[in-house]
Length: 239
Image 1: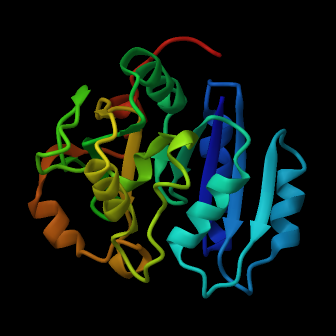
Image 2 (image 1 turned 180 degrees about the vertical axis):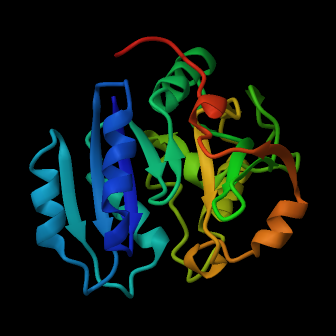
């Protein structure tokens, strides 16, 4: 069973969060949404949540950091696996299934994607971004990371290992670094079933590196309007 935790400061991301969760073929799951802006309309989110099963809405003061929100969500999680879901990315219907199969076959404690697709909306350009390798164990003494929007971990590692309460970007990479220092069993799944979406305005992202720099560090797949067939790979069956 999986507890999906999504933190957001934008009401405009409501439909994307619910769509990504509802799309998953893995059936044994819950969604925990944490609103991290004081002016966000919690009632509107609760109305949307009432049409789904196993969705909880919380609101934390905006002075709380992303790490604070993720730790709060982990504490609220009912299930043994916690999945971090970014509010503005794309997760195919097989995303959770692929990760859960990897947990079962590798006995990993932390799973994510070291290599992933990245889509630049303005240019309609699909690329591949590499932080590490794919379909293999991640060595704790070797440089290489996991994409922040793909982190899934066993709740048993908490609270010994928490997300850092820091302002700005780097929350995810610091968490992965801590897991490495603690010698956790870490596994990187395939590049498929997840897309890191980049808007034309890079200021709208938590990760502030410019689109130009990210594009230079990526391998181009090609221009495409509908990337879904290209990034989707079937795994397993409904659970």
